[in-house]
Image: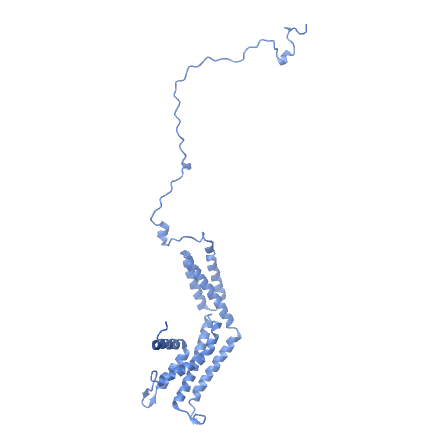
Length: 304
């Protein structure tokens, strides 16, 4: 019968096995082992590595830092690296050094003054005193700009007019003084009093002193690169102010306050001292103005 199993081994059973064959186990069962009486070790917390440990923050010390104590610097609330406004201060100092050497090569006195300012700026920068550093930098920059403006103004036509005016007033003052020594001088056909001749001489000497003072100041300020065109009117008015101061000193002389009737034998030396004072007053008008101002304050009193 087809459905009855056959005990004969088939060739296919070599590949897929014989289902009807009796299978034997392919493993070995070990006998039970006795119980272990060894106690397991206790679990302890892991010790951190020295590289992973973080140092504890140090307590603030009241003692000054060795660097601060060695350099004797005042602590500041910021440094140049923290505030971007002060990052370019050193570069500005270097630039001003180059500008001073290029623009002031023909003026040793002015260039020396600029170098002194820049030296103070460098010293203040090294001390981290940035406020004083900025001050000296701006002072040097202003001096350089003023120097350039002075050099430009000295080449303008107004400078030529100013010098012509000073020369003309110098000659006019000398002419007035020489005219007062003309023998038999008359005014509208009338003889001239000696006091009037002294007045003419004080006017002339005052104009000469004013012209000399204006020429001296113009020359000095142009040489120092400090000439300010705004003072041109002052230089033009100095000879006339010198004559005015001469008239004022003449009044003081007639009142006996200044160089009165001083006699050496039969010769009056009072007018000679007066002329010297008038020339000095015209040359240094600032001192005369300050003297008159103090005198008026002493007579009238200070205004509140």
